[in-house]
Amino acid sequence: MLDKILNCENITVCYKNNKIIENLSFFVQRGDFFLILGKNGAGKSTLLKAILALKDITNGTIEKKFKFCGYMSQEVILNKDFPSTIYEFVLSARSANKLFFNSIDKKIVKQKLESLNLWEIKDKSLTSLSIGQRQRVLLCRSLCISDKIIFLDEPTNSLDIKVREDLYKLLKTLNDKGLTIVMVTHDKEAFKYANKALVLSDKAKIVSDVYDSYQKGDIKFD
Image (tube, rainbow, N blue to C red; front, side, top):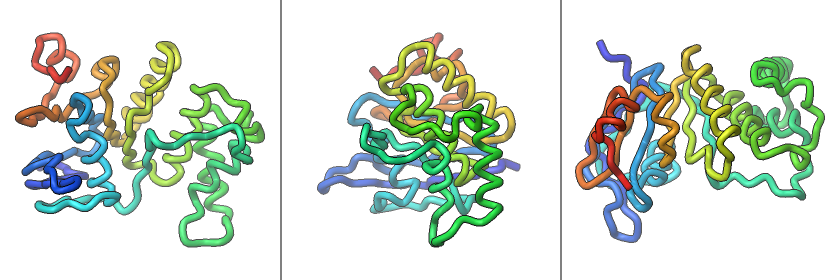
């Protein structure tokens, strides 16, 4: 029996009366490293926001077998005036609907910071970090919300080759430990690490064995 953690049936998403996504059906299984692919304007980020209830769907159903999820948005910008340490920023992920952090919150944050090799630099200012370190911090913050499933929107944008590769290896390690990953990307390097992909084109399709399928020419969206 398929262990579907996310199931979308015949969903349609509109923007200013234009159908960006139309009658789309797909599912994600627990433990997948799942990519959402497509050229610019194909609706990748729109679909992700619909899944996360950040955008309304006009038709269809979205069934989610999780209560909480991590989310790394491409719109998150940590500017030079952001007055926070790594620890404070990551801890803030545990602040939903409460005024004070308890010992469980602090324990979870410590565990996640340690697992991503950030504990030793937890008191550093966000403004002092490299781009790669900032992405790791954003990932850590997402994992403090949920270590079962996370959604990422173009997480490797503006990263150089080495930093990008390190991030993918980290994501794959977390995936191998049971984390379900759903990631919007146009970066072909991601194909080496994912096991499934949804390709948004004239006719959307699901592809398994992502890297092999790409090499065979079965994935085209440029």
